Structures are given as structure tokens and as C-alpha cells.
Image 1 (cartoon, rainbow, N blue to C red):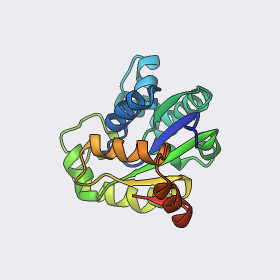
Image 2 (cartoon, helix red, strand yellow):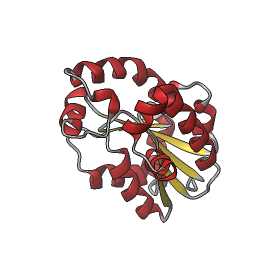
Image 3 (tube, rainbow, N blue to C red):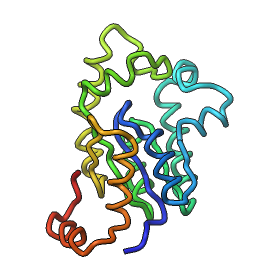
Length: 188
């Protein structure tokens, strides 16, 4: 089995897409791309400012254009924003010649990992946990339906997650190949 042209990471805020993505890219010898960071660099403004000025629809339009551009680059690991799956038109873009990995984490972990982050416009309210629960109920089925691999990240170090992903992307042992065939889809 050879490595995919692209690895696309999807999942909620706080799942570790950027951290794990950087480490995974290094391990695979790929370039790391973070769609949210590239949007900020090109706009010269942070995502909360873009949301304030253009609204969520304006940001999502920028995001779709960016995903379309980045999904054409080979040998990359692409970390997407948590809401990238909300636009149906993004689904074929995310799957284009790519292995899609859903980094799944609990609401409790999301709350812990995002509680001090002011760069998440959807969480700037009195009850961020309720927002995370609502978003999870809407987005989890979309992440799952797009995923070739679902990787649980709760109580795992980024290094362990990366090691497990590398083993799934480039299996080396016959036992592991049998396990993938047997399970169909790979849930870890």
C-alpha cells in the first residue's frame, strides 16, 4: 500500500488538527498546510475579524476557495477548520485524491483545549460548552461520513496519535493488513 497523495484532517475545534497535522507531515515527509492560517495570512486579518466583517457566510466562501486550491497540492497534510464540512460543495474537494482522517474527541476535551482561545468566534459567548455540543451533534455525522479513518484523540499524546496514523496510512505488517480488510473502515 502506498501513501495517499494528500491527507486531510477534519474534526471539531480542539481535536488537535494543527498539532497532529504538523507532526504527521514531518513524519511522512509531506508539507503541512492549515487552511485557517493560510486564509488569515492572505487576508491580513484573523478569523474573528473576518467573521465580524464578512459574517460566517463570507468566511465559508473564502474557506471553500482555499480548500479547492490546497486540495490540488500533492504530498501534503491539510488541517481544515472545524466547519469546513458544513458546505456540501466542500465534500468532494476534501475527498479529492486524499485520505480523510477524522480526529474525534469528546466535548469535555474540546472545552478543555479551547477554553482560553479567543481566536474561535463561535465560542465567544456565555456557554461555549453548549455551542460545542450543538456543533458536535450537527457535524459529527458529516465528519464520520467523509472519513476513511476515524482516530480518537482523547487521553492520547499527539505523538501516539501520529504513530498510530502512520501505521494506518502505511501498514507494514501482514496482521495489520488483515485487520483493515476485516474491519472495512479503520476506527482507532
